[in-house]
Length: 241
Image (cartoon, rainbow, N blue to C red; front, side):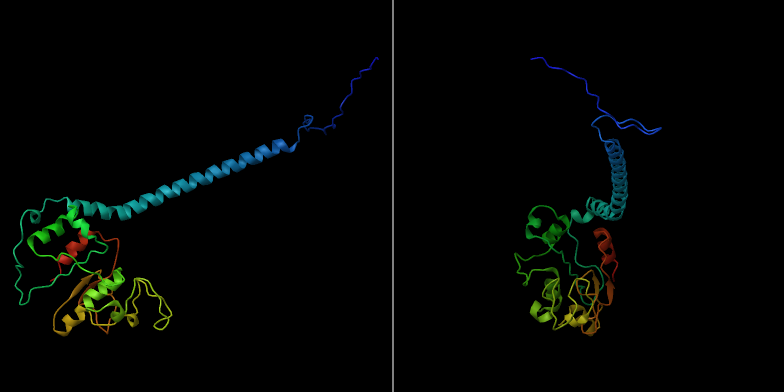
């Protein structure tokens, strides 16, 4: 059987004047989509570069602000100070009653004393005396225990049962470390007792010392500021007389 083959012309849309002819089977939007995606990629890269630049600036500012504190602390610890080699004598100041210095290290684990991580505290133990163990109050949180130390009361009695808690019978606002409302605090802190007996007292970042507990506060007080280096804290405490 004979077959007849014919050439069939596929008509193309006649482009208008000045327009480019389209390829058969290739949508016109394909080229436009490519340019659209290209613009979006450029915008995304620009945004990412901008965010990276901002992140670098913020990192440098934070490092300069907070990193300085740790550099100063490291320099302080690395000094070859005479106290590291000898035990100091008793208080050389002329006091009718020896001064009492109470130091608190929040979150300090007892095992740190055996790992040679705290040379100054180890020196105090070597030249003085220490207890073999102690029991914290419950709960073993910062504010309940610090108030228990200075009032001699358990948390349920001095009122501060946590570092963050709520009691609508006392206040409609929650208690936080920034709370200065004396309605939460009970008992008599040691600085109030000292003032009653004509003595001076000073606190440096002691929890609760910024509050007027039963109308009283320490004679000298420094409001909490986490940006102050530990070495500067020690230097400032040494200047109190």
